[in-house]
Every structure is written in C-alpha cells, then in structure tokens.
Image (cartoon, rainbow, N blue to C red):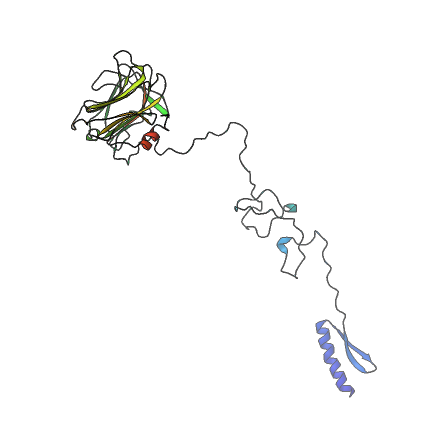
Length: 330
C-alpha cells in the first residue's frame, strides 16, 4: 500500500511546485503534500504617491487613485469654467486629449470704469430718416445726408443750386439761403388727389409782414408754407388749413400735411392741429415740386430742411407720429 501513496505524492509534488505552493512532506502516516503559505497582500502606496486620477482603474483593481481636489463645477450654460485648477496643475482625465490641459478663464463682465457705453436704442423701423424702397406709395424721399439724391424707389432727378449742409435732427440737413433752389422733376406719383407731406424745418428767422416761406410746393396742386408768427399753412385744391404759433426760429419742428381726397389736415410734431374739407386739384402734368421755396421761384425759406417725404396717398396718425419721432402735446 506504500507505493500508491508515493505515486500520489509524486504527482502532487509536481503540481504543487508548478503552482508555487510547496512540496511533499513525510509523517508517520506516509507521504503528503505540503502547501506553501499564502503570500501577504501588497502594501497600499502612501498618500500622494502612485498614479493620479488618470491612472485609476475600475472598482477594486489597480493602484489606488490620489485625491486630485474638487474640480471646478461646470457652469449652467455650458460655457468656460473659472480659473480653479486641481492641485499640482493636473487636469481631469475626462478632458479633451487635444486641449492644452488648461481650463478656460472666464473674464467676467466688462469693467465698469471709464465712460459708459452709448445706448443707441433699437434700430428705427418707421423713423423719419428712413426711405423704404419697398413702399410704392413713397413718391419722394430726401434725407439730405450730405446728398440731394432721391432715395425712394423712383429715384427722381433734382436740380439744385446754392445749397449747403449742416447738422440735422438725426444726421445732416440741407442748408438754404435767400437764393437757393431745389427742384424735383415732375412725375405722375406726385399728381394724385390723395397725398401726404412730411418734413422737418428749422428756420433761421420767421417771415414778417406779407412774406411767406415755402417748405414744399407743387404749383396748382398742394403746398406747405410758413407764415409770419410761426404759423403753418397747407393749401390743396379748393381748401386750406392753418395752425398759428407752432414753428419757432432756431428750433426743429416736424410738420406735415395730409389729404385723403376729401379732408385736408395739418400736423405738427406728429399731432393733428387743424383740418377742413376740400376738393382736390385736377390731376395731370405739373411744374414738379420745389423744396424750400415757392414754385417756380420766390418765397425762399432761410434755414434748414431735413427728411422730406412725399406720399401718393394719405398717412395714418401712427405713421405721422412715427415720422415725427414721437407725438407732441395736443
């Protein structure tokens, strides 16, 4: 019976040695397998040593990760984080490999020192200095931004003599003298029974006695004039309307005259000041339109004119108010 025990020990010894577990031993009961003691568990590396967060393995395996500090919280809007960095300059393992490893710095709001920024306000949509080319009812649009070009879709030709430019309500304005002449070619868009005149004026002086000063005139059809005492008058066909003491010398005033073919109304600072019934003038060719004088000549306005617009149709109160950049008091 001893031989089988030696046989068993022999093969057990081979297996034990191959596994690094030990070898055979003798006792009073015969040969047996002697098992090697279990190797001790590896020591944990000291705090701060070993691989960082980038080398950490899954749960329960590999080296123990070090404490890289609390990462900066991500902003709610997904933008750049603050200047907080992990200790030692290490970056998060989830960072883009192509990045420089440095978090973006949020510079915060611009400094408040120095001159405050200028608030330009919202862009105008129907303000008086606009010439919407898509408006077919816009017969003439003169902004006078260092130019006497008609900026309506029609692009009417002008004959201009002895004029200049000065500061206007929202840019440049046309400067007129005793001998200035601004004449617009005739066009059928200027002939309709319904019309609207919009303009800004700043006379250097007011007419006196029997004088008058032309603002816009289409001979025999309609005209807007300044009379003594700052009175504004509009004539069209068989009717006329006036408003006294509404224009001052040296001050900008928004003026307008509107006809719907039956009623003629006068507007100052976007507010209606007078109205009356009238019969429109006959349509057909005319001498064109003059700006800043009577047509064909005389009654010159001395001062500044700006943002002249003629419409081949009536305008609403809201539109006239917008052209005046806000309505004045009733």
